[in-house]
Image 1 (cartoon, rainbow, N blue to C red):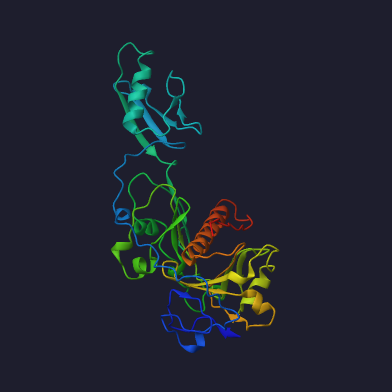
Image 2 (cartoon, one colour):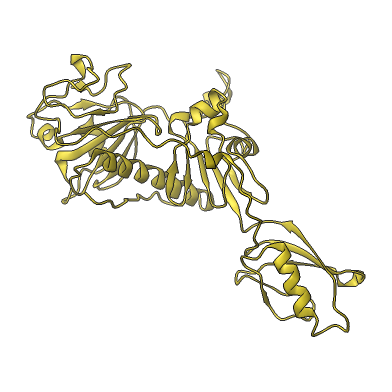
Amino acid sequence: MKSLFPLGWTATALTLAGCMTPMQPPPSAVIPAAVAVTNLAAPPDRPQLDPALLRSSTAPFTLGPGDVLEIEYIGEPTSRATVRVGPDGKIYYYLLPGLDVDGMTLAQARQLIAQKSEAYLRKNPAVALTLRSVASQRIWVLGALNTPGVFSLSAPVTLLEAVAQAGGPTAPAPAGGAGGVVSQTADLRHSFVLRHGQMLPVDFQKLLADGDPAQNIYLQPGDFVYVAPSLGQTVHVLGAVATPEAVTAGTLTLVQTIASAGGTVDDADLSHVAIVRGSLTQPTIAIVDYRAIIKGKAPDITLEPHDIVYVPFTPYRTLKRYADLILDTFVRTVGVNEGAHLVDPQASSVSVNVGVAP
């Protein structure tokens, strides 16, 4: 068995056929020609953070289902009532029929209530409207945190503030603690923010460990923040395998890992199996010919903890698109499973496959 990546080597891609990449890794890193794929170009650097992400939104708050309002006709204390925006986006107050306020600002909702009340009151009413609680705009902050959960977003919140609101990353328990159990520490290299199904290029290591303010983005409603736990000897297997999952064991090889995931499916492309290593913002990717390995024409490959193994359904010719596919699949799978487990701790894990043109 050969190690895929030697310690300290951080090239962006390994697509060798008995020759060195421009990064000139040491000879021990070379994958045999029978294993390496040579027709893929090295991917460019991962996208940088858009400076706009570091600025809070100037858009006003808009109402949605679950939000709670306090409404009162000014000068009529008995008219004060607390109402909730229903699943249909409507509120029901006083003699008024259901008023659709979904997507309205507070000023627009106040104006609508006053306008519709004119038909039921002798004089034009002045309406007081106060937002009491928010349920329609939320962020998910999960993972290796002391108090993970779903939090309301009624005002601009930065990523650092959200992590602090969730209690901060967990710390290891003192040695010899009760039962010998050590709590999971955070794996900042594999932590991420998911927005509209896409991973934002936030470097949690720089933000939480180095205090880099250039990574402290403002969050938006629906954002999914995940601080990954350090799970020891865990390798994630995704794509065209029988049971995509996180495989936890001692030293694992590529063959053992894929076998633990139930093996490959019939339509799998075994000649372009990818192994992703390193942080999600600066990954290293190697494409290997798995068919050559299982036929004994090439040695097996030793994996490292937190590696991502992806077995594709079809071959890909552009390494950047392939790398994006793998990382999108990984973060969406983690996001779906963590969200489902929050709602139902007994929920079964699922795998998400993201389509992309070759």
